Image (cartoon, rainbow, N blue to C red; front, top):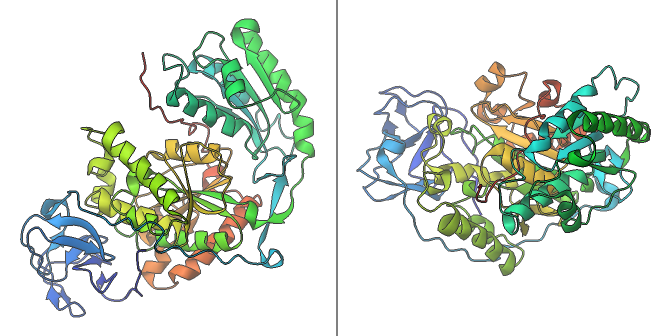
Length: 515
């Protein structure tokens, strides 16, 4: 488990662990700046969030941040020198997975002591945080139809249905020209089914073309979906074509709206919250403020019986041993390593992608040298509790507590898998200022630093930069985030919802061959 020492938030630098050979610049540090707490004078112009050598680091020696290896010095580095990609190598190193050796079960609060929120209780007992009607396309060829249907239902036309949050289209770019069997098709279908039965949807339409590889019949059979009062299907080639299918879809939604509007929010336990954890546009403060604070909120949520889904497999690579040690069983830990080995040995071999070292330009400018350092912060979003299960992309999440889902690091694809798995809320940390929103699950944005928060207040829901400013602790911010979970789940609009984001962020993972 990554140990977080009490951080000194005065002076120009932050020490994260007694064993570290680097510190992090809390503010811009100029050449010649004395750092008495670390007994060095800065030899570099160091931007806020970047690392500075706190002692001599020999060539080949590990760079330690939070007492975790985040790279290796490729030259001798003197104290006071900035440490970044120019003097740090990314290379593999042995990690002891020590499966389940640090497992500690969660002590759940009594039912009577658990927090509550106002949610939509569905017939199957699941609870939604929003109340949409969804329209899904089986294939890109029906994408225009589903979007045209959704566009017809303007706020003015929905005004008489105040309990309906909207009519939203979920279109995508695949569904044909792809493998008809195996994981690529199964993945697409379970993603679609996860949305069709999502508790944030009061009802759904599924619309196909008719000749595509992702046949509507095959989707329904594989995922055991049944047509009924809340699920309708259309095939364009059998419904008279584009215009007639749009008209039929509009009429179908009109018929669904009265019942959808009858649903009222009611008080339910926080155990019904399932939060997808995302981070993007990260910086050197992500692992100091927003990510550990979100982790603290997930620790609280787990004690209340809820669920947090950590994902983005390339962004735990290098620190996966800190998760396997917390696994509830050896088998759960091994499932995580199997997914990582698939990425390293099969999926990304020879490719210039994140898991093979280099992070995005925005992350590099933010002070992160490589994927090991990015992963260090990313993994903190899951908190400090036990890893209770590992899921494949878009599989239905049924285990409570902290779990992991195998997804790419690309946020729209990753969040799509989490929502398909049942996430009814998304929490997204960012240091650079990612602009993201999702439907049908609302997304809240957590800023890592105050300057970015002040620039982007229309997009950011909470300022975790207050931790860096010294006005609040990580645990106090975690409590604030948990309370924001409850408020947002009860209907408070997130910033991304107020901006109308989420109509284009349904992006199923495309892993197969297109032909």
